[in-house]
Length: 486
Image (cartoon, rainbow, N blue to C red; front, side):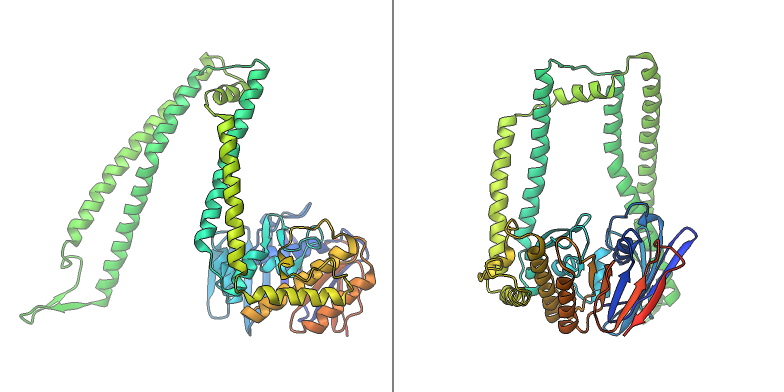
């Protein structure tokens, strides 16, 4: 995948950048010129839930992008949750985040969710977290990266049942932790002697309204379903009628196919119509009762003492019966079950999976080339799943993270054919020498010649076929200078 052109627009300000398919240096002499915002905007335009930067709200901007993948040009447009893709033959419209997988399956020709979920973490090193993100964590914002999921996807491993169980356990843990927090809050109220328990009249009305809303929901859903069926039935009959179909009886007579000759069609429509009218009447009555109660609530608030927000909250909390000790016992049990499932999934992921060995070999080779001592990158292939980052810091961590990311990019290309752009934000710094970063970039040019490279930095680098895109002042500054340095 290569980015050909990218345009972003905020109000009256608009900027278009044309990329080289080789090396692109997003350069400025100073920080705070919009380089990081520009890189994040690229991934936002691709459909990722990337957080905005200070002073720049992505959800209020417009983005246009042209990318190339496997010989096909895709033109993308994004505004807030709307994203469209034009591949030259068709234009498809999507809604985010609902259609995220469908969008990236189209752009990458890959349908494996474990792989799609981890592409950003493999190819993008954000200036805040990217250079410390080794094998699991947040890439940017709440976008996760998980090496186990990536290795499962690349190795074709399936742990669907175990993953569902794990998610269910995580949800249960969260619920019980909320319950335990309630118990702790109750204890705090009791300790200071603030045992407040009474019902204000508006609380009673609120409960009545909630009951009516619960009654209303299934009626509303059924009414929508019936309306949809009636609409689809009409479209179907109109379609059949336009086709002018006929059927032949045993006697040889031809009968046209219409809604009048379809057995039971009219009766079915009349039954659905009658049901729709009955549901509509019920819904109208419930809405009338809700409106009446809400009007009554306003009157009651004028007549009776209104509790402060904290008093009302304390009053409600005191009515909940929670056993703190029993709740904590359940949480501990669920956490043990969670750990057991995680270990089981990890073992299933690693078992007979050649990707683990290939990743390890690739990581070790790059680490060795960057002169990382073997004590930091252990010979055991399970090292790639390590949780121990305490022994890594400064330049060593920088080099090891680079080695991991290059291995991810290589294996993704070999196993799926996806050629990811390699995007690095502010690689120099954090106790890392300029020469070390330059060596990393030269490795990328040497080993990944088909991959587009995009680097944002206040430094220039000795690289071949580079295009320098200089941000002179601000992101939308009209004085930006662009040049190609061969």
